[in-house]
Image 1 (tube, rainbow, N blue to C red):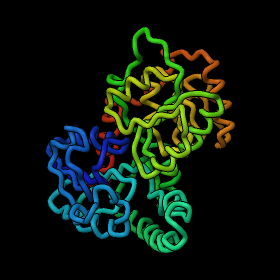
Image 2: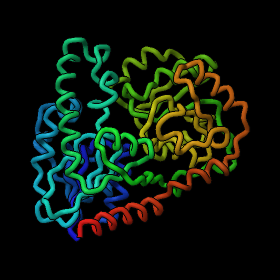
Image 3: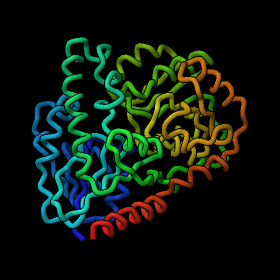
Image 4: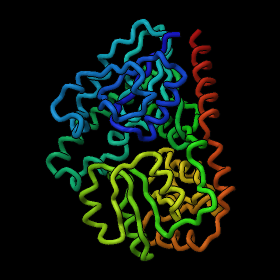
Length: 366
């Protein structure tokens, strides 16, 4: 079976790229169609595939400022030629799900999220506080048009697979479609607890530095308990967050998976103050036996067991997170129980379930 993979962009190994990596390993000969590829930014598994990019690849300064070209993405994704393939799998959080597929070719979309900035998180990305009043007004018109296009093109997908029940509900709300849930995979063989090591008294965030992650809440909460915080990641919010941080907060940039694993193993707890569609980081941390302090919304409700593998915070404000950090440091968590919870999200389980979804889609079309 000739399979084509479609992904929004390849500029780093975040959660979406790790899901694509697991799917791509099932189809080693499948080309990857993507708007933009920064060579060397993704894993050897993904780099081993033929990668076909769009005209976005040639735009000025696109590697650093690709989000500025968002209005061009619908046109770019629709220009890919997918004739001759027996099956198309898109992994989408932006426009990949709207690729045009021949009528006779089944198309399964693994949806990380309907387009956040076009639907319910416009202000976090393009609000007046982010880009100024005039540019925000222009972008609101653009994103309203993008949302209509996003909804209109949902029927290009034969079957949706969501990465969580939370995202399945958003797919139902915005696309009026039902989605099967297949949780993303985490390499639980790689992410392991450190043998016979006591955690250090610091808190950890591993995240893209973007507005909806609400990392200022983590900074304020850790300051309130006189703690230390390490924030691993890069993004447009870095300058603002550094200005807020003061002493006691480290920004090492983006680190290797091995270095991040070491930080997971050593930290007192991992913080997640924003609403995540699923959230790979909490599962990776739990695989290392460390508790998670997370906002009780979104994917955290499906991966963190309150009081057993971490603490779920009902109030999104910093004082509530500070109280949760005090509780976390005063609680003796069972690292083995935390680890067992993470093992629900293993790579073999993901591959089996995604293959079942692919087979069901093929059967429905035949």
